[in-house]
Image (tube, rainbow, N blue to C red; front, side, top):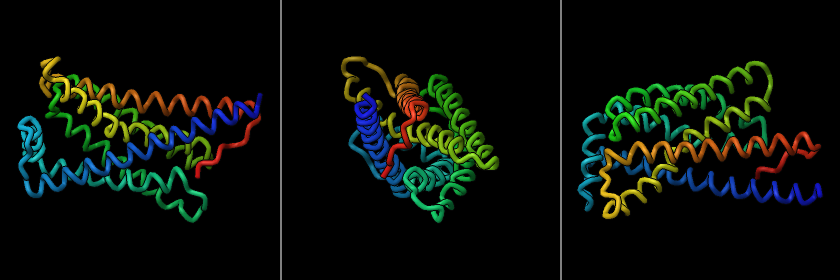
Amino acid sequence: MQANERTGALRAWRALRIGYWMCFLIAVAVVVRRIFVLAALSSTPRPEMGGLDAAFASRAALTLAHILPALAFVLLTPFVLFRVSVRSEWPERLLFPLGALVGLTAYAMSRDAVGGWTERSAVLFFNSLFLLSLIQAYRYRRGGDPTGQRRWLMRAIGILLGIATTRPVVGVFFATRSITHLQPSEFFGLAFWIGFSINTAVVEWWLAAEQRAALSGHTALPIR
């Protein structure tokens, strides 16, 4: 029975890891595209996307102040989640100031949210949860509790990568516009709530499963 539980847990971890790398790649691609668009303001075949690009271009400095630290944060997450040596502790230390910059600029970005109050409410809720998770992780780090730090860092990373999960959701809304007749200003907020909620729920599910495994006497699962 215990062997079956551990096999199931290992499969769950592999699925979670695949989801993480998908979010990682999407997040990096989104930021790289935004940087190129801000630099060149290149045209796009979809006029609604051109409108969104123009909205970001109107606050280019703030957008860059938000997405560049976010990109650095995302690029450091593999070293934190999959590290096997104390020599790689420096990425953890960098996550805290980078996360603070991402969180503070996210509040500023939400003032002109494309999705109005629905999007703004999602940003305020999940961004506050992100910053709270970072603060808790930092407190556990200062208290010498690596397990507590890791759990709260996983929460913070999962929430931040929720922005990547919103992209396929937005894509579905765009693809079904002929049926729903929803405009970006109407579905962007919904996409934010859906995307961030998915990531938050998945991370909490994993942490709960991991805790149950620990209480059952199972050793920590390999993450490489």
